[in-house]
Length: 187
Image (tube, rainbow, N blue to C red; front, side, top):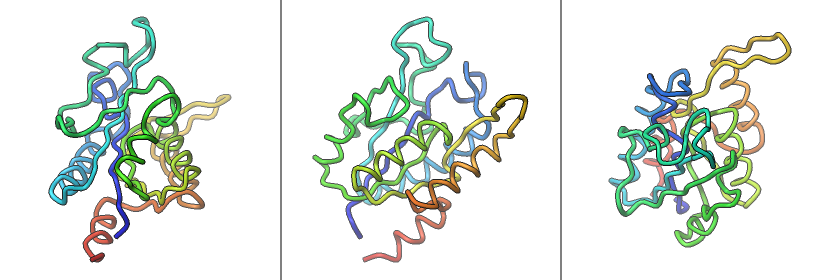
């Protein structure tokens, strides 16, 4: 198996029930992300957490140093696991994520988290462009419904459209169970 790192993106309190920007299915996505996290920890494979903060305290969510900007306890980082702080949608932009992955000497990444149509899409495309073999656990990602010029798009359709686009040319997009099955078949 190539050397792979798990990247958990923005599973932060404000995206969960009662948060300032609640997504649909965040709890289910976090449950699947935890399964992946426990697998990677048990196999002593690298894990990188990504956490978003907006630059000012008047942010609509993920305000600096707020409880809402903290990583949710369900996927809380260990002291030995790096946390990348970002202020942009793309987790690579203006961060040290690429340097961390290079230091870990990984050639593949497994991505999960939120939001499917923004940060998951951006980090997957950027990782692919950097030459990483990308995997996305679609059931470990969450998003929300959107509206565009009078057209309402339900969250499950937003999620499916973005996962389909990533699966077309950027990543192996499958369920958590399928990924773990693939990993367990490799020597």
